[in-house]
Length: 446
Image (cartoon, rainbow, N blue to C red):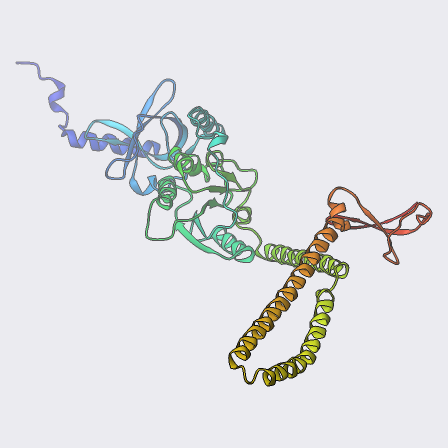
């Protein structure tokens, strides 16, 4: 009788049943676990939104999967080689006879791991010249439009808008973004590039990228390479205001100016309108006083020269008097001339031709005399006018103001305003005024 193998007496299972049994055993034995390891094979999210990678240490590796909903909640962006602590459930994947951990929460394995990654990235971007001082742009003095990249809710945007409104109200455009989590970096970089692009809204004169304080994990989006490159490439001057004064992120190095707080960023972006109003008012007053002082000095100089010059009417008085005298003599002479001509007419009554010739000859004499009189009068006026001009030029040359322009000064008594012409008059304690070409200074003799 042939020997029967004991295997033939065992229950037969399908592959699916065995895989399911193993799955239940693994899940019941481990449940939720907390695993520390290094990310390996990380390529970002799948097109479905899920993420597949490995967790490894020096001796082993385990497959890991993170579903879309949990992956989007991460406060940092995973990177190849980053050491993390993952919390999830160990299970199997029957399709490949693999065991894996389904991660529900993941965080960097301490600040040290993130700081090491941060320093590595900072060194790389520094070597590319993204943080070079010569790339920095000056902030506009008085921007018309300010772009703000931040969360649309929370205290940060309220503080910025309130501070701008108090200091110098202007047009503010807010580009709402997530400021932490997996999607934050992409949204922040897109906002910076969007403001720099030609859009239908007014292009800002300055940008503020801001968020409140938090842990290094909370602020990690501002250390992401795409955010740093977008900030460095911005044609619009950019102020970074991420976290509190002690927080430092890589966008701070790429920005044109770093503000310790979002409120400080608003103060850097705009001046204080009231201060500039008062400054302009003071400049206006000083300008008005300067113009008034200049006009007064010109008026005083003109008055002084006018007193030194002879009056124009005085220059013509003699000529006018002579003209009046000649006019009277003419009126007296005309009747005599008429009587003389009348006598000549009687004498030449019988000689009409001779009479007419005499009349014509005397008429010519009268016209000639009149023309000579007019010429003499005009010549006299011209002589007097020429003498007045010569005296004016001589007075201008001798004017003490011209002497002052050559470097001399005039010392005046501080009380009477009279010139001090000798050392005897310059007694100790006397108040004096020293007049220069461009103004006066008061002094006291010792």
